Amino acid sequence: MADLEALGKKLTTEGPHKIEGTSRRVRGLLGGNYVFDTTAARYVWEHPYYPYFYIPKTAFKKGALERVDPSAKKPYWLGKLGAGGKSTDRVLAFDHAGPLEDLVRIEVSALDGWFVEDEKLLGPHPKDPYKRVECIPSSREIRIEFDGTVLAKSSQNIFLFETMLRPRYYLATTSVDWEFLTESETTSYCPYKGMANYYHVKVNEKEIKDAVWYYRYPTAESALVAGRLCFYNEKVDVFVDGMKEEK
Image (cartoon, rainbow, N blue to C red; front, side):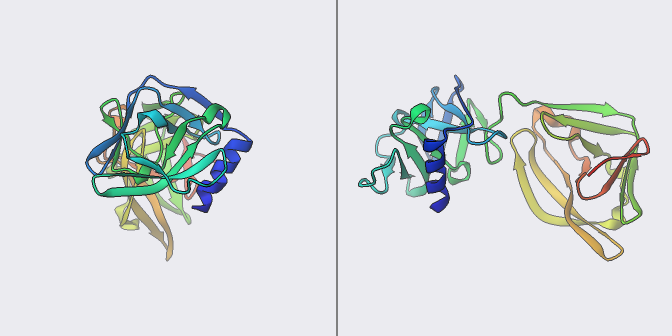
């Protein structure tokens, strides 16, 4: 629990990077029960990159939330959340802590599901209300190389632009040389795009694990990239209309 202790201390001494309210209905599912249901959640940016939902103490189902160490004299405390025979101790709650007063942080993966209105939350954090994803078809040529070998070349691509991040290029499966790709068992979740699967790349006995990803069933906002392959810009050489990108 040391990481939660450190986070509690940091947030009560330095404060969060940013905090604001939301009128979205936010619910948490654990053990077949909604342990909280609120339209008074707060977006809390613990750092500049993306927010978490913090939940008011008053939103929790009676008896679901308890304090682990009632004797601790701090403006924050570690808690336990339980329902339906399941429980988690990945809980950090605040008492008199400035803008975080009477709010509770639950690690996203500790619950069976989070729902924003009636949409299930994907990934390790909620969508940032100031961030957007834009998928745009492009005929600019994308060429992917690794160790001097061309892995893919395409002029029928989808460019994905995501606020504050570098562009990603999604190529048709027919533009890739499959000789150099092997399937990975890795999966990941993105709040904006959905569940990703991966491939490894191997050229001349050199291998890059999880160098390529794709979305079989992306979210509606990223539907144009469905089934397309995206090479990790930072791990391979990417040329856009013949110009090499910086890694």
